[in-house]
Length: 137
Image 1 (cartoon, rainbow, N blue to C red):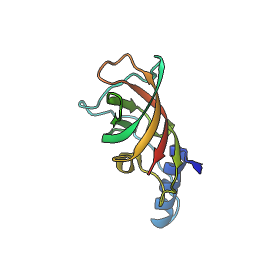
Image 2: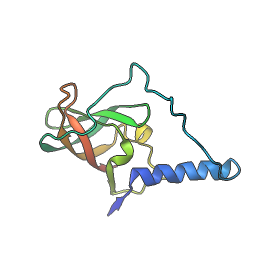
Image 3: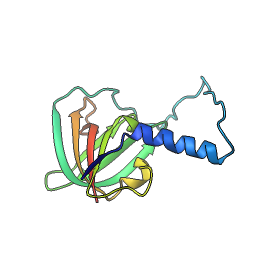
Image 4: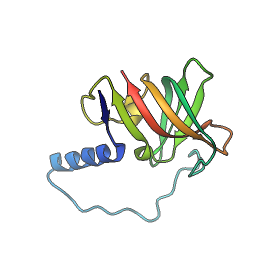
């Protein structure tokens, strides 16, 4: 059984639930002066290289401001290190299980088995930009 979970929708649902629990919806505005920390990884916004697929176990998940995720995928082939500057943009599918609630990529991906697809990046510190994942329990 495959279930698709668009991360952005899940994150919006979590934000809406948190707002409802806190006492109702509130208007929010963003500070135009917010900047990324100096130690923030800076990856290319769009990786346009060749597409690749890999399978393995997700390790070393790190998230940084505002929605950057990077992790290693350890599998039968050589390990790959991938990123996405907006983890909500990753097309996520789960197979063989139903998550207990909203998926938090920064906490829930660690140790999961995954099939991923990614585009090679011009940044040689990573293998590429992940755009599709199937998580397995």
